[in-house]
Image 1: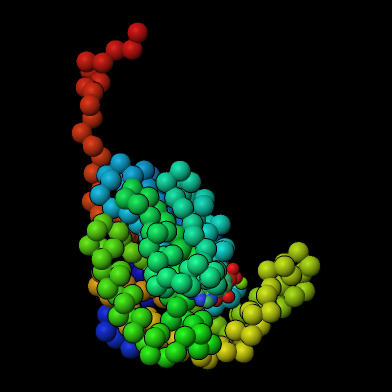
Image 2: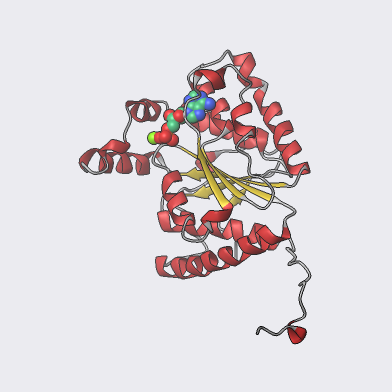
Length: 268
Ligand code: AMP
Ligand code: MG
């Protein structure tokens, strides 16, 4: 089966216009994707337990994407497969004054999951080359050097046992319009909207450019970027779950040698 995500080849250019956000291949029917995904969620639960007892690694899933691309929905979905006891989510907002007084990776490094744990970043250090770049929040020479700094930082993490998966939830501008309108029209969803979301939509092209740069410069062999077609929520859920399952399966996780021989063990 073809993989349902695009791994950005290290060193290659990225043209997001050439990746269809509505792609659902290899599926043609939503029901098929949902059945495969349900099986993967169960598998993820088992794999996370093996991952925990294996103890060699931490897993960090980075979620990035435009407003309404489904980062929050993705978290809700994954919560159906991950054990809360071994997981943690960090949602990165605009930095506070304490955070701004440190290097941009300071607040990020302290949220990196410990060995055995699965950490999910809802936004991340990539905001420091996305919103920061698009809005000139720091001078250009400052954000330009961050791509290399990010690669070096992630490389340190990988060398210390952190498996890093970075997913860009790719939606089209039309799909975002639909989702923003749905929020505007639904009084129960209106709270989700911020004036800054509408401002960011006006900067759509600059954001796509900033994403292309981040994906191209920071997809490394050690910590690759994946583009997830995300116009269809069910496909997005399937693809990210599959990626996590494939990644965990590739680790040849080992259960510890049992301390007890069950044939010699009786419970009185
Ligand atoms: P939300 O994900 O909707 O809760 O929004 C979080 C907001 O925080 C978004 O507008 C982000 O662009 C913003 N944000 C996150 N990280 C940074 C950062 N490093 N610098 C500036 N803004 C940020
Ligand atoms: Mg928002």
